[in-house]
Amino acid sequence: MFSRTIASAISPVSSSSSSLSSLLPNTTTKPFFSGFRHRIHHKPLRMTTTTPNLTPRATTQQLENADQLIDSVETFIFDCDGVIWKGDKLIEGVPETLDMLRAKGKRLVFVTNNSTKSRKQYGKKFETLGLSVNEEEIFASSFAAAAYLQSIDFPKDKKVYVIGEEGILKELELAGFQYLGGPEDGKRQIELKPGFLMEHDHDVGAVVVGFDRYFNYYKIQYGTLCIRENPGCLFIATNRDAVTHLTDAQEWAGGGSMVGALVGSTQREPLVVGKPSTFMMDYLADKFGIQKSQICMVGDRLDTDILFGQNGGCKTLLVLSGVTSISMLESPENKIQPDFYTSKISDFLSPKAATV
View 1 (cartoon, rainbow, N blue to C red):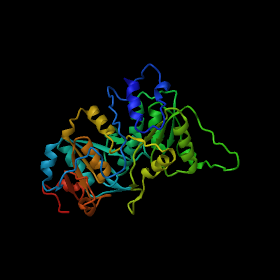
View 2: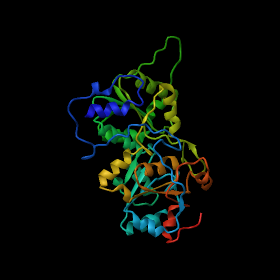
View 3: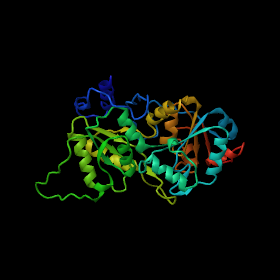
View 4: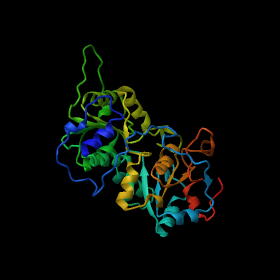
């Protein structure tokens, strides 16, 4: 069954007939997370405003009765950038809102596509901002990459080449995987001279690409060689976000720009483990025993957060404190309509939410 799962997972994006199954041991390893076996979302998710299976809602409603929404669900999943904070600045009213929801007995989960930090590192960021959040409540795409490799029993004698930052490295290390690359390769340069041949490790069985402030041509070429020349090498993206909030002053090019470079050089589409892929939603539902109909996904992006919630069968709330504006939401070009929208999550504090 495992071989069939792998074959179906990589077949939509592989340009060769080779399979990773020949590299895998016959025995299984202890799961990284007890009892969870993810049914892979086989079709890779592209960074667009629609997907073939999406049935857009005709209209979306402004959140007018916050208490009614709060009472209708057990769990709130919050995006972080643009919802909880922007850069290193906390968005107004967040601490009071989270305290109120906890007092009502709601489970809070924080899911971010930003792979630069591990869950432990994100825990420290929450603490620095004055928020009391347990590490078990935090799910970053860096963790999702390691969890995905565990879910497919990726062989421990194979290596992972990382185009990304420390968060991915720390999560892979915790999961017991061998890795190379990361920020260290940001210092490497290629001397393009006649006859130069760049060597690469033929034991690399997966390339994981996330947001990388140390991105360079060396990493593009190394990742390309692994994906194109190592039989069955997986191409995994933590996310394909177009932009990200590195500061609260403006939007910055996101992880999708790094992924796009490898898509261009390999002519392969990655398997995405972050939002809007359902991998993390399935993991969360299994871990906490949550019915997805009892979850509300709260985010500031239509093509990641809201689509993530809709793909998972959850209620969705768009906040306008981050990337998406009211004009973008109401644009005829937009086909992704959340159940509700409001200005910021502190609107939860009023029975009648603030007018946008």
